[in-house]
Image 1 (spheres, helix red, strand yellow):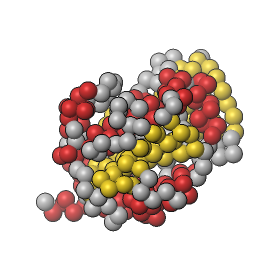
Image 2: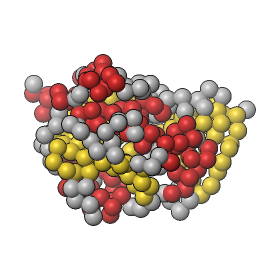
Image 3: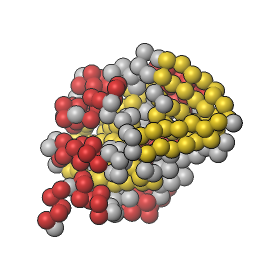
Image 4: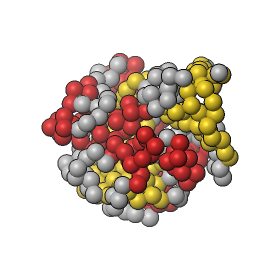
Amino acid sequence: MEWFYEHYKDLSAIGIHIRRLLHEEKSEFQAIKVYDTVGHGRLLTLDDMVMLTELDEFVYHDLLTHIPLCVHADPKEVLVVGGGDGGSVREVLKHPGVERVVQCEIDERVTRVCQRFIPSVAGALEDPRVELVFADAVEYVRARPGAFDAILVDSTEPIGPAANLFGRDFFVDLRRALRPGGVISAQTESPFYAADTVREVFKVLRGVFPEVHAYYGAVPTYPSGCWTFALASDGRTPAMLDHQRAAALRSRYFNAAVATGTFALPEFIRLLVDPAAQAV
């Protein structure tokens, strides 16, 4: 048996004990690999970066999806940007009021590989409420003003195919693509190892949306094990989160207590996402 190592920006490395490589291919956009591991279930990597393991993927997907959908008054149509593994769609479908979920993923091969090798994550993509779109999300979003109640940006790091998903123009288009009362969520990287990225993303978001709020969670196989997320809208806030709906969800990480506690930021994250807070 061998070990898979991800080296992150010459700052750290994480090792995962693997049994064997199950699948490997080079798509038009990136190298896709799936491993069988000793203690993490199936492992998906893109360009040798950890995207998910079956052991802890539910933390990330729960936080990215359930926070915005419980803050929204009544989400019916949801867009997942990226998220080719299908985990975000799986969680969105747990909300009984959702009628349509569009997953817009630029690399179809990621989705097809996950459907074959990681059905615990991608299995919900066959639900009739799901529409799979394989296209550039930047163009897709720009062409659909007022189309969605919630948009979840389930992107990789801001490099390669995902680089444009962290810029101001894209966030402006996201705001236009929302219906009144709409919300977005986005993964915003590690506050330990990608502090500059976290700081810049929240700065850009605050220039586009009136309401921007940070939250975080623990994902052991992501660099530093601590991951941040953004919630943004024209008027919805964490105080509007429907705790009754949150309590009714059957999720492995998210519950009514987490719905509140995840916004209780450690001081270093609070100052990172809102430099103005230093004066408070």
